[in-house]
Length: 371
Ligand code: F0G
Image (cartoon, rainbow, N blue to C red):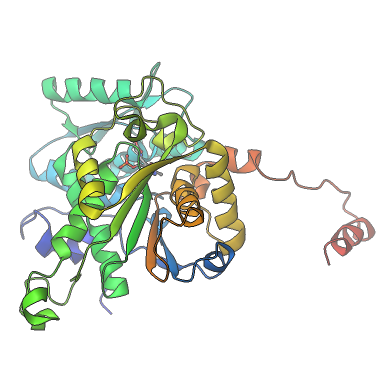
């Protein structure tokens, strides 16, 4: 198999690039679609549940899919600097891709409300880290103003190239399953990702399916990511930051899932369109439900995602229990970021380690209790 060189290379025929576009890539994408082997039974579901583990992207989140496109296009346009507001992952990704491209990167982050790993990444990759006394929504407003007045390219998901890159997750799911799943569940913050998923699925529906049954090799997408249908999209928010459930912006969003601590999502209309056109819905989960789902996934399946990502599973658990999901189907859950991003939250909700002397008998006695 050829050396994988990132998602622009892989899906170049479905992205806004040409042969002369200078691709800035860290070989992002191509993340594993992991079959959950224990949870479906535990949750009483007779179908399949698969996790698309985006935490295994180069900077540990799905943001790399959009960032490879946004930075590539910024370089192509001659930009020397990029800027973003972020709850953490976008800044980590922007910082890394800017380093790769030799650009200056400015990131605005909410003071004290960003997970430790993400802050470390933005700092380590040499971006100019600006902590603001405000939240993500304040930062978003500021970077839009600054980018319209100064020579810096905005790489938040209001930049259309971000969603172009992020839509490739749908292509990969279809390539792995041979078709779209029945349901796709994911967390919603600024709402770019659910919009990008829907764009990717929509572009993959084989135009000739109706005419030829299996498209017969004639459709433009034959051979890569061709689907017969689109999934039902379910978007889950944290209860303290759930503007889609409230019907409008939330002034002071709050949640332990800091990545989705957002009150005024930029892709409001696109996200609503995704949910409505797919026959899906939004719902909300409490912080306790989110943390419980994070732990359940870590301890039942060996997959460690960050709290925001576990909102996918937290919401799904509720919808399965309520009987809102049809039996016997295939469900894909996007796990947006790696659990190592936020070690503080993981440690705070876990049992403290034992402290024992370095003594064979003492340790043996402790182990015996578990056997
Ligand atoms: N999960 C994680 C881990 C995220 O970092 C984000 C967004 C989301 C889910 C929500 O995705 O915004 O497209 O609806 N993080 C952004 C950031 C806001 O700045 O890193 P969305």
